[in-house]
Structure formats: C-alpha cells, structure tokens
Length: 102
Image 1 (cartoon, rainbow, N blue to C red):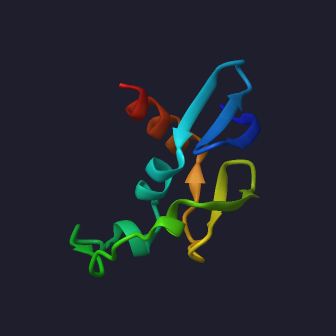
Image 2: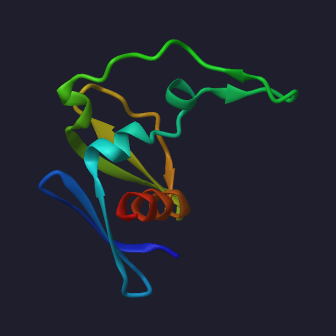
Image 3: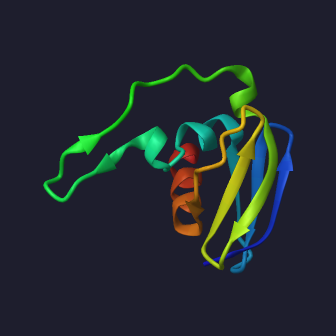
C-alpha cells in the first residue's frame, strides 16, 4: 500500500493511502521511531546490537522541515535539528500509525 497524499497538519503527519484510508502520526512519535542506524543501532551477523549513546532530543528535533520520497517505497523526513538519515518505509509508517491509535 502506498500513500497518495502526505501533508503536515499541525503537529501530525496526515497520510492518505491508495485504498482510501487515512492515517495520522504525531511528529514526535515519528521522530522517536526513527529507524536509522544512528537512532536504533545496527545488528551484526551474530545478532549483536551496536548502538551509540542515546542523545536527548531538543524541541527542534520534532519540527519537520520537509519530506522527500525515496523510490516508491519510503519517505525521508528532514528535521529542524538537521537529522536526515531515517528512511520510513510505507509499511513502517502504517505500523507507527496503528500503534499510536491503540
């Protein structure tokens, strides 16, 4: 499933999907679920997680500057604190939205 429209509405990201459904994800939740190696770490072939120390997120870490498309499978948010390495697959976005609405 792919989004046909993505817009920031206040402090949320609104996604309209090609099946007609809609999802809303709080920007803070989106940032805190960043899937990049710097935020979530990396697992080696033996299953060991390598992760740097957690860094506190300042208020500008939750301010969305823009969103880029990555191929036909993901988006790449650009945050006000300069963070740009998180690639959110469309499936992952739906998971975040579903978990948030529970």
